[in-house]
Length: 149
Image 1 (spheres, rainbow, N blue to C red):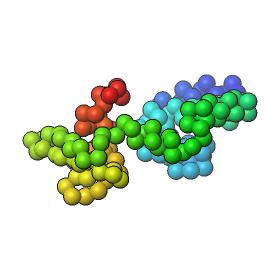
Image 2: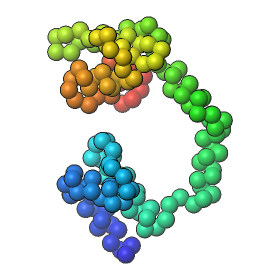
Image 3: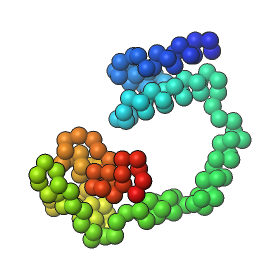
Image 4: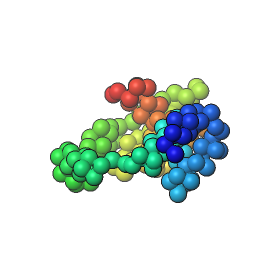
């Protein structure tokens, strides 16, 4: 069985996206996420190998959990706070010109506001403005395309 694994992994690059999504359903017993094809391929490749050769050793899982707790003490609120410290200050106005129209977003306590409507993420606003998926932080110039601020 394990001698077929390299062929299965190579096939992920050549099969259609609907076939990739079906493999996701078969291997994860859930609907595939809306991420891009490359994400699906890499996650499926890992899952195929995980099911064949076994996942992480329990010792490794425990070590990763300990490292995570060292960072945030196991407190989910601290994880959220770490994300919040990167957000612009409440009341900040973000400006972006898109196809000759100036778009203005205001940072609120619960997310963002654009054209009088509340949004939880900048990506949702960018998607509404452009009609395509965007990283909202990149779209509004808060991070460059490589993810650095």
